Image (tube, rainbow, N blue to C red; front, side, top):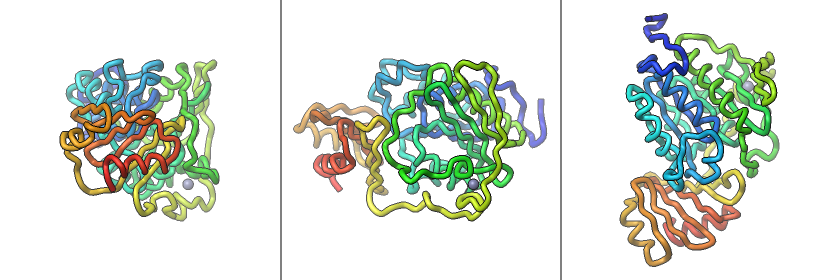
Length: 330
Ligand SMILES: [Zn+2]
């Protein structure tokens, strides 16, 4: 049935095809929380679902409720999720983006989006998203799950606080955070809550803010009132502290600390087959449509067509950069 704004109402998660044509959601991060939200939004029939994730599927991702299976290990999470979700609702256009979201890539990754859903596992990405969403006036649905507690907050300043109002940046933003294990009891509920807020908004509803707490041992969701922080640098002063892109490559240690993502910041494309041939003398090489990987123990280097790489086994950004320079170039 038609509602205000010309979009069609659908019950969230009821599997009705193409309930919200013309709508566009971006999910950043496809761990336990983001994957559930992606599944629910696909079933809810959003028009376009953009899936952004910088990482590859690992064995530990299979232990929790997830979109992935054994055959996906070593594949990018975004492309694995896309392949899994396409048949769930063929009316939904699913777009995989195997990218690291940082100050240099965020505007392209959230472009043309009606609402951004947070499936990330780290604060640094959330502060970048917060500023980009304020700048582009896109609502940002914050979501997190750790241990037995999950949190969701629909952020749409100036009506609501922004992420910085909710959680002012600690002095060590960007340090390696422990992997959010996303308690199996809490992560699906957080993903579902994010999806239902997104669908509510896309159906023409208003986001009223508030901080929703999901506790493992309690079935009800608790809602706390939260107010914008007076003088907030991000939503009130419009400062862009995290959107400033440093010179040179963007190198970040991924959660858990034994892998590094390195984005050289190029504007060129690598021909994967050529790179695979060039790397063959140095170790075991695997070529897929999405990446080339090279095993040179104790490292495992995966390179994507845009030049970004993940170096597993690298315990510091410097070690990853040295390896990248040696095998890929500058
Ligand atoms: Zn704020």
